Image (cartoon, rainbow, N blue to C red; front, side, top):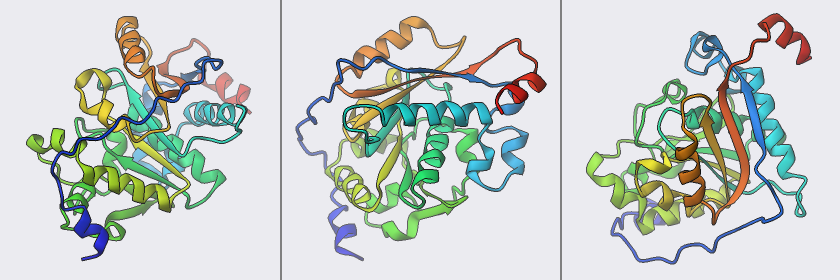
Length: 265
């Protein structure tokens, strides 16, 4: 067992200072509308049939995520944040779908330099189910039962770190552990970008603990389902973390699909 794995066996909750908030008062939230239909959604037929994660992403979603990334490059630093937390107000908004899309887009620009980290233990996603869930993952590394190199997998050329078998009664403790802090820091040393798939904000305090590890967040809102009140509450909770914008997921339009495809060329 490596020194890193031994160090991460300490699962005791440790007192720690919250990372200083990062604000950008002059930047408004960019809203990228996703023109998706039922058959386009990740987790449907197209997702199951294609081989690479990048190929599974609907064109509308890919373009929306590219817009968010490009917009981030226009700020005064012209740098996309190294650690991006993808989060939603409630479960079912499509956080994992967007997180995987963001990972694929960043990997296009810097192959092999982005890793998707599954911290969203509170829900099962069709998007994540296509990745191999068997075997150890993040949780087993934290307990010293597996090596980090052995659990980072590649799907469609993209590095992924699955959650592993996190017991329900361990979730709160793991989220606040010093071992988690050290693991995220080690991953940040290996990759140019980490995309952190974070639990819903209104589902409990653990999501806020996970956001401590993010330099910026991307908020996902399911159009027509998530209420304005839920979104406002979520935005208030994460006001201290820099925002990359908002993705409106599953927006429906009346434009026929053939015309949408033609207009997107």
